[in-house]
View 1 (cartoon, rainbow over the protein chains, first blue to last red):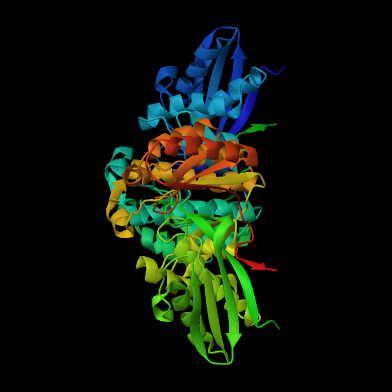
View 2 (tube, rainbow over the protein chains, first blue to last red):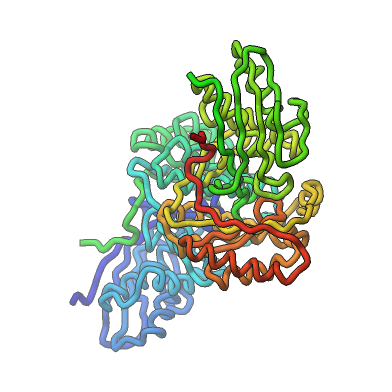
Amino acid sequence: MKNEIKIFSPATVANVACGFDVLGFCLDTIGDEMVIRKTEKKGIKITKIEGYDLPFEAEKNVAGVSALAMYNALQPDCGFEIEIYKKIKPGSGIGSSSASAAGSVFGMNVLLDYPLNKTQLTNFAMKGEALASKCEHADNLAPAIFGGFTLVKSACPLHVLELPTPSDVFATLIHPQIEIKTSESRAILPKDIPLSNAITQWANVGSLVHALHTSDYKLLKDSLNDVVIEPYRKQLIPHFDAIKKASLQAGALGCAISGSGPSIFMLSKGDATAQNVEKAIRDVYAKTDIAFETYVSKINTEGIKILK
Amino acid sequence: MKNEIKIFSPATVANVACGFDVLGFCLDTIGDEMVIRKTEKKGIKITKIEGYDLPFEAEKNVAGVSALAMYNALQPDCGFEIEIYKKIKPGSGIGSSSASAAGSVFGMNVLLDYPLNKTQLTNFAMKGEALASKCEHADNLAPAIFGGFTLVKSACPLHVLELPTPSDVFATLIHPQIEIKTSESRAILPKDIPLSNAITQWANVGSLVHALHTSDYKLLKDSLNDVVIEPYRKQLIPHFDAIKKASLQAGALGCAISGSGPSIFMLSKGDATAQNVEKAIRDVYAKTDIAFETYVSKINTEGIKILK
């Protein structure tokens, strides 16, 4: 039995256009690395954080909070040290806190010889996520832990559905280096929405799930629409409409806000198209004075990975 | 080439709990019979109506209106006579007008050697449906014409998705012999709904589609919930809550209003359970002074059928 593992904890995209608060998918080339180490000394200790300035106290760090929740429930005869090599910028809208919250419990579960299943791990990770977002949600955690496309049917009790991933779907992302406060992106949403828009949205969710099951890329394209949330939140993201237009012209199947933004994601059929889309959106942002990063990634159907 | 066919045009259930305005499924043992006959004399003529008192003038009869729309578009070198043996009571909430509107165009299409596909037929049938319900919708027409479970992704342009039907799903229905005006059942609905309820509803639509693809009966049960429409419309249906409670206790996977009511449907795993559910709901209504009919049916994956 190993006493230490190194893992890759991936970035994730929540909402996926039509599926606000329920759909998500997992990225492959973007994510944090973490080392989890079993110790004789009991307790949870964060011993290293690189990349971003985050608290070392376990109870103030999302990775620590989820680890403590799992640790206190299982009461193992050992302790754990956690090293975090943070590469996903906090507040980027691609599941930075989820990667941390999921990574620690995933690693501990491996070192304890898998006492918990993925749903149980997600439940503990939600405790860490709640520290970051003030509510226990799983729309980034589920794809990080289960991989691929996921649907969180309900958060309490937690019920995650693993949706199929068509083999040729690739994601492109742009992360404008601006800050959107989660409180602001929540506050901008209406409490009530027109029934007619809700009907359009649930038709799209149903057809998106059908498209994933049937690898129907044309239907995927027709389903990746958000008539409920995007009209409000896009106001917070500079040049959103230009990015969307350019990405669709470059062949993207769809383009929408990743989580609560500011990142924007596109899905495409094939790596080559995803690369073309990246070029097109870089051209849009290069003309602005906003710093940005872009990424292309296949869909990660495995989720968190053990390295080496 | 035949000059006359007799068809079975089935009853259908629209909405299917969570999928208001988009989901539907097709019944097997409940439906109208129609005879469509090619004539040398041009035009559309309704020559016989049995069962219910409906107008013979083609332009005032839903079967006639859809037939005329198709006839005027195709301009064939013949005419058609239509006989309607109406068994689905108008206003029952199980697609009575859809059966008529779909049956005439389906029959004409066969006699003309299939010039139109199912989507085109549904488009013409929508013209007839509009006469009955004042709007062109396809949530009953799509399952009647395509069979099985359907999702109307959009009505304009019409885009129907054929969902898979798990082999062991059976429907039970109760039709209380009361009248609900379509105008009333529409007027009772709110224009706006809470975003939180909409999220629950689209999570259920997504998981229902996933359940149909994976033949997951437990998930089907968990998905057959309507938090948006049922709280309003159930007020129009006497003893709805008692029927729902009794059917679920008898083993139904779910119970909800069929279309805009007054019929109520249940889905069950297996014919035997569907029969038990029928007995349970008969017991509820037998104690009231409201006349009622009940039915058990497998899901009809074929849709409209040619008889003999």
